Image 1 (cartoon, rainbow, N blue to C red):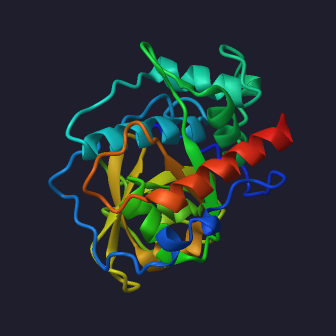
Image 2: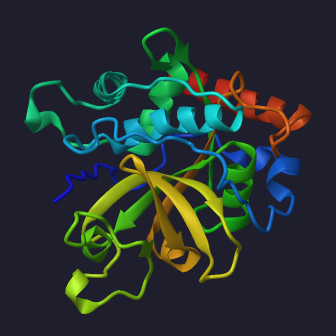
Length: 266
C-alpha cells in the first residue's frame, strides 16, 4: 500500500481575495483546445504528502517545479521546504501529529504572497488569483498561461482505490466498479493538486494532474464532478517566454489586485 495523504479544507472565501476576472484579455480568450506537454517533465515530488496532510504546501512546491520545467530547467524543492511552509501557513507544529490538520488553499496562498515560499537558496513570491470552479475555459487559460492550475478537489473513496502494486487507477473517471469503494465526491476528503495538460475539452478527454509525486490521468467529467476551487499562481520571475502568459494591462491588473488584497489583510 502506498501512503497518500489529503489535507485540503473545504473551499472558502478570504475577504476580498484576488480574482482573475480583472485580467480581461487573458481570461476572456478562447483557451487552446488541446495542451500537449508530453515531452516536458514537470518532475513532481511527494514533498511529504505521504505522511502529512500538506497537499496545499506540496502543490505550491510542485507548481514552482512545473513552471521551471517549461523554461527548460529545474528548481530544487525539498520535503523540508514544503514542511516548513506547511508549518508557517497552517497551525502545524513539526513533530506534533495532533496539529497536522491540513490547510485552506486561500490561507496557504495568502502566506505565499505575503512571506514567500522559502527554498534552500532563495525565497519565491507568487502572485495569485481565483476563478470560478465551473469556468473551465478560465481554468484552461490558467493552465496554458501560468504553467498549471492550482485546484482543490473533493476526492471519493473510489479515487483512492489501489491495485495489487499500490498504484491508483490509470484514469480517474466518474464510472468506477463497485469494488473500488464509495464514488461520492468528498467521501475521502479534500485534496490539492495541479492541472498540467489536457488532450481535448470533451467530457471523456483526458487531463494530466500532478499529485503525490506523479502524473495522474483523469477525464474532464471526473474533474467537473470533483472540483471545488481553482486558482492561478504566477511566478513572474520564472515564467518562460513563448507560452500563453498574460501581458501588459493583464499583469498590471493582477499586481494591483494582489497589492490591494495584502493591504486589506495586513
